Amino acid sequence: MIDIADLLRQSHTIAVVGLSQRPDRTSHKIAAYLQEVGYRIVPVNPHAESLLGETAYPSLEQIPESINIDIVDVFRRPQFMPGIVEEAIARRERTGQNPVIWTQIGVSSFEAEQRADEAGIPYVRNRCTLVEHSQLAF
Image (cartoon, rainbow, N blue to C red; front, side, top):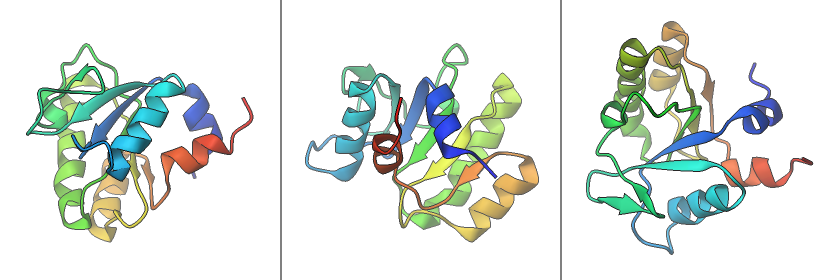
């Protein structure tokens, strides 16, 4: 079981998969909040060059090895989760990094969670990073 408070306290860099270019979208608001409270955000969006002042990457696999990802915060529909888990596995094989996959509310997939578990990748299901972080006492 992952201790959410410890995870959020010890993490520094969050890849936000599905970060929208539109400021009115939930993914954009949450990523902006996380950035504001001190996390480095790494946008993952194949349709953007940069978001929130950071270089955007088309996929997890295309984030440079020099960027250590602590959390992969996912804002994509559940049917995309298995592919995202496979990208996280491929990235781990290439970099040695084993970030926690964090699925926002309504985003999780049993198939993806099972695959992550088999691969030894920690998985947080149906939790909001903004809500969890805002409840912490630092």
